[in-house]
Image (cartoon, rainbow, N blue to C red; front, side):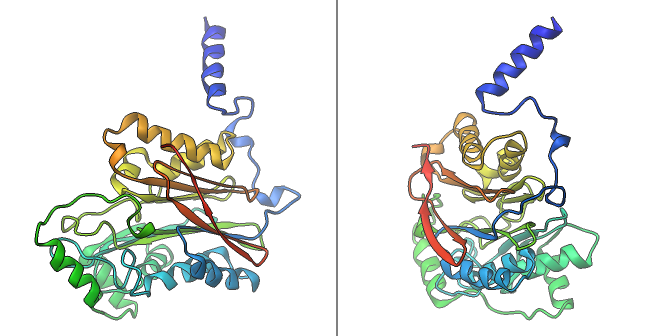
Length: 323
């Protein structure tokens, strides 16, 4: 009977393309391997300027952690990007609230959520990682921590975002929009010259959301997850759907079990479409980078693109889709 159970288990895993012959602990870190992955910067959506900013750090021999922070800061400071940082669309109360997280090659991570009046939540998240025993700070506590560490208050609601909010109030109807502006979050992964990987994710969240809503972007394992022995993943789209599947963690664990990044992203999307009603009306996309430098990208609906930088070549590619 035990042999039959083992056979059935192997057949099920095999059907998913998951290796069953290698225990999880058999994966060796880069320090124990002969070759290093190629230095790489990978980000959600058409974020080539952010990639180029991160690539400058990589080329100078900087840490992947520094690269991803500097890369996404560029988007956080852009008032024309209306889904991240300064200029982000507000919640239904007219208040811009920001979420962000960051994770390094050693598994250290930091996060902030429901942060207000601070332009660069990703840098606050990094300080949470480096200067506190915690992983996440929220709301007024996150703001207090930022101010104590030299960050300055700033009104993040731009005239255009305020205008959009006034227009929305005429009907006050909240509905997720697939591929809104072809952008709703920036998630970034990078491999440095030393072969180590780090990641960052930052957003102003869903436009006109309930005051206090937090999505997947600041949640380690949902919007972002990195394991230096395996690779990393980031998510974009409807945060609630990603949280329900611990999406980025799922992608990385599927890669740990032997799936290529593309297959791992496809399986993570299938989990959502199998288990969550109404997926026809919202978008989720996953982006993955393994420790060999291979890339995967998959989404529910067509339209998700990503930016890839390697060997001074910057390109935008289109992800495959379930529908």
